[in-house]
Image (cartoon, rainbow, N blue to C red):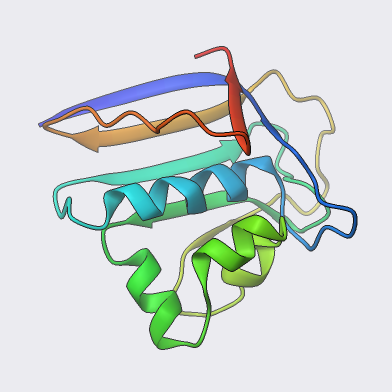
Length: 134
């Protein structure tokens, strides 16, 4: 079992009419798809300034059951990612978003992500998420 923490800013390519959510929520949802068969893993992604995109959340926490919980509630993780609408995925009580600060600092030193596991999973190359720094 181990804990990995990294910082940096991910980039999300937005469609013409993006939905709600920020890059940390997008990163967490993309990672959730990779965690489906890894019960031993949990990941979180959050902005250090207390905000993420045009939402009141700072990010999200995901595990191997996140995508299934969304599917059972009628949500499609792939569709939310394609529409840059990860914020819609986190609006359900059964799915974990990280509440932001009441008054964000607006001073991001970096976005923070961590992975707690006994293994290391790398996201495949994608035209949707690019990590700048780790």
